[in-house]
Length: 150
Image (tube, rainbow, N blue to C red; front, side, top):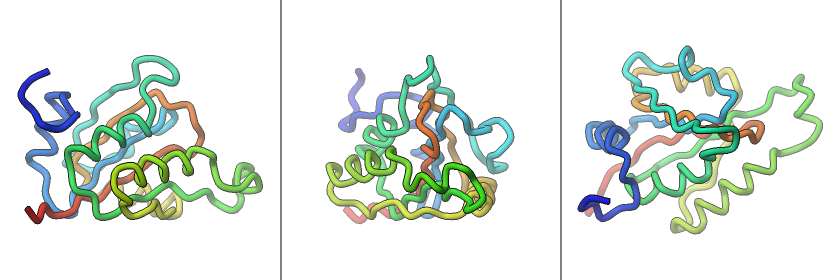
């Protein structure tokens, strides 16, 4: 398990996070996200998609929050013309809010339009995609790192 004080023990993820800084972006992608093509030029993709449903975006979020300061959390907003838009908010978004509350009441997720979400991921600031096997629909999360103050 190593000598780390936080819960995150994945060596590659820790390496990327240690090199990242304020405003760096981390995508936790669901199993449907095109992780190999929708990424920034400086991003590393780490696959944790072991099997359908393993691991989930919420599980990754919970562990990441032990290791990094997060200023902003964005979900991928559902376009109005998408069939899912009529069904309301995806249930997984409430799961994300629960994880954020348990981590100390961090800022709740804000949806940004699907196309703006892709643009944000494709930016120079995108340093890491963690591809999961999450089967929940609209379960992508984009985290913007904050500053450590102590």
